[in-house]
Image 1 (cartoon, one colour):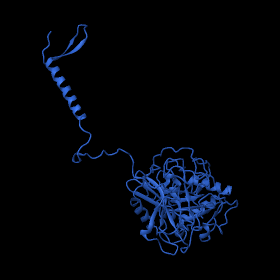
Image 2 (cartoon, rainbow, N blue to C red):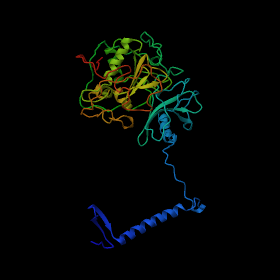
Image 3 (cartoon, helix red, strand yellow):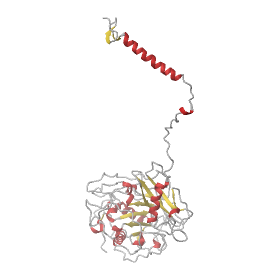
Image 4 (spheres, helix red, strand yellow):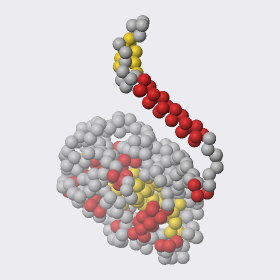
Length: 448
């Protein structure tokens, strides 16, 4: 059947194969379109390669992913400087404090020769536009007297907490592992406790125990994590919660000693000892029995309770931070676990324990039986290591990797803060398990 000129239809050829038949008019239109397109392209190809200045187009922007190498310091600097000034500022060798305009940030090792200063490792590197956490220091330009370490976390803005330097006794920071003394510490010459007033409180009756440490409340309700509350006043009298903690430790672990609670106001530097809410627990890393005692207590202090609350005892006691054997654990950064600590004392002959004001006043549930409301169940930067509710938290791993011995001040490993890293969040240095030793014996709040 002859095909009309303007139609397209499906037909068959002589072999019976189906073919598309196109009318002559349609063929002409398609041919014209193809020729027109080829002509336009040939015309473009034939144009000269140069154009006049007024016809020049802007150069094509590179698609490189390069970004600025450092975050503008004014974004982090004012926050860190404000925290330092809130804490009383940086002391100068000749007296007074560093002017605000002379404060500067550094992410490098400060070196030796400082009278005061402490930091958490690793320092730096200088933050980039993608940095969400970094450790650094604030120092005074032109001064080599004091610096302050800080930990910074960024979500929408920077959140900065200072690193406490609680024992201003050395004239040079101890930044490497030191060989501990083989004998128990003598608190007449200990670097940290030597600054404290003599502990004249009666020593509690020995009551060794290996079971859980139980206060006046152990249930589904619990406090949040203690915030950082640095020394702001001077009232060295031992507070009731601090004294109760001292008595608990000395009774449960009679092989250990007391380095004191109170520190005189005229002693240089800032310390919760001057507010009666810090205890220096005498134990030496070189003494096997004392070290085992510390390991035992810290394991209970940071254990997950039967209700799924991580670090339950520390929260109920109002523990703010602990420094031991060149490492520090912060309640307000509990997600980080134990962090390498460099300060004016390595804390190899005593454990420093600072309490929040609620803990020091014995207002928290361990001492009072009543949960203190209003404390965050998340740590600095919004990290939430526990549910903070009556429901169970995810079951923690039964094994942990502890910080290496003598790792204080060491640089290396992952940069910044990496929750879920190999640093233990529950075990103290050299402890390899989060499990709680089972025993029918328990330790409770001392009455004497």
